[in-house]
Every structure is written in C-alpha cells, then in structure tokens.
Length: 327
Image 1 (cartoon, rainbow, N blue to C red):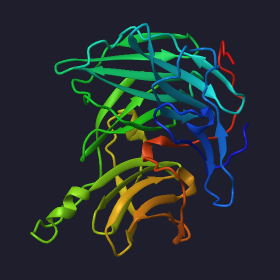
Image 2 (cartoon, rainbow, N blue to C red; image 1 turned 30 degrees about the vertical axis):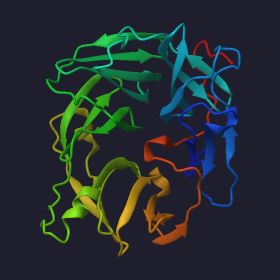
Image 3 (cartoon, rainbow, N blue to C red; image 1 turned 60 degrees about the horizontal axis):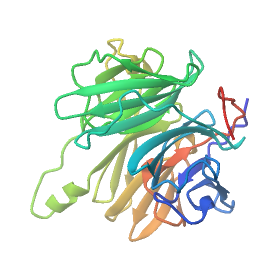
C-alpha cells in the first residue's frame, strides 16, 4: 500500500566508522534536483560501547533494509545483522547465527529478501570452506536461524546476491550461468543459462580491453536483465523471456537482446540499472553519467563519495512492522 517511487534508492556512503552517524546511509532520488536525506544508523546510541568497525548494506525489499555490522567487544570481533525500516526508524537485531564463523579460512555470503507466499522476511547465510558449504536461513516470523540441506551438489563458494525478485534471490554463478534461491521453498537452483555472448577476437590491439569486461544481472521492467560490457565503449543488454525458469521447473532460460549501447569511448565503470527507472550509471572519461534507456538521454550525474553498485539499492517506503521491532 506504500506509494511507488521507482527512483528512490538507499545508498551506503561510508563503509567504516564515521564520526557523524548521519554519514553512513542516505536516501537518494534520481531526480537530480532532489536533496539527499541522511539516515541514522539502525541502532540506538547506547547499544555498543564503541561504534561498529564496519557496516554493509545487504539488501532492500518491501521497505525493509538488511544491514550487517562488525563490532569489536571483549577482545573479539562479532557480526551483527539488523532488519531496519528507515521510514518508521525501527530496527531489529537478529539472533546470532547457529554457525558461528570463527574460522577465517571460510567465507560468508549473505542475501536478503521477502517471501511473498508466507509474508516473511528472510536472510540467507552461506558459510563456505575449501571442501564444504553450509547454509542457514533466518525467518523474521519465527525469529530464528535454521540450517538447510543442500540438494544441489554445487553452490559457488562466494555468492554475491544482487537483488530479490518476486521471492527469489538472484546471483551470478559465473560468466555463463546464474543461480536463484527460492525464499519460500528454501532451495537453490543452479545452472540457469545466461545469453550466449560471442567473444571478441583477441589481438594485440584489443587484448587489454578484455580485462575490463563486466557483467551483472538486475531487475528491469518486471523481468530480469543481463548486462555485459567490454571496455571498448559498448554495452549489451538482454531480458529474460520466461520467469518460470527461476523456480527450477525444467524450463530452459531464453533471452532477448533489447539494447546495444555504443558510447564511442572506453568505459571505466558500468555500475547498475536502477530497476524500472531504466537508468544505467556509467563512468566515462572520469565523469559519472546517467543513461536513460527509454529516452536515450545522457545526463551528468554528480554524487560523492565514490559509490559501488552493490551499495546502491532500490528502496520503497512502507509501514511494514516486523515482530518485536525495537527503536
């Protein structure tokens, strides 16, 4: 029931501790004349003896934002995860996971999204070692973590959850496929084919540009888009034709090419498409620009400090109330 605004995003501007608590997170509107709204940290000032060492946005869905903090207490580091509603300024610290990562040879990946069937916010945590993978899921309605058994024989050691789409966490598996996590059934579906992209002929003249190849997946006009750019000024984008393939029902993924963008000069960065706002952020010749895919209009885009794509999430205001939320 919240008003829809496809151009509103939550931004992480600071990754470590800042003397100013308003300096870490903010709401940003893509209308360039709109002022930015600073947000306080999603915890009370007396909660920690010292400010967290590190903060990270994990995701945003249905007006709730997931944030991870690393805090140092009692001569040890601990990770705290919060669910946070910036509109109501309420937050909830999650209980500690069952699988405590005290082995620094392992990596931890997090994903966050909303289960539209059970009306439940969930956090997915993958702990990966050299020979093993463990997965547990937090349910906001049950307020606990539960370990799940992997049916898939292979889950990548480092899962970068790009976004949540209609109850599925979406992430790239490699350059040829992506994977999903069904938040309702709590299962991974791996090996969803990406578009077949012809590789450029490698020569002495263009070999350095291959190292600038970038790929990403994102929501776009009620479907999923796959974007690939090679550092020669060209960006190609495909959209997913049939979303049934996300649920592992034996439906083969098919894609349609919808955009070919040629800016005529090498690109330092292709950052993100902002969902149905259809904006692509590009860094070209040291300048940050917005590329409007509908109007084919380029606009200068000034934002400071430097932002990374996975720290810039679409956000929609809501009054959704999580169980046992605290101020």
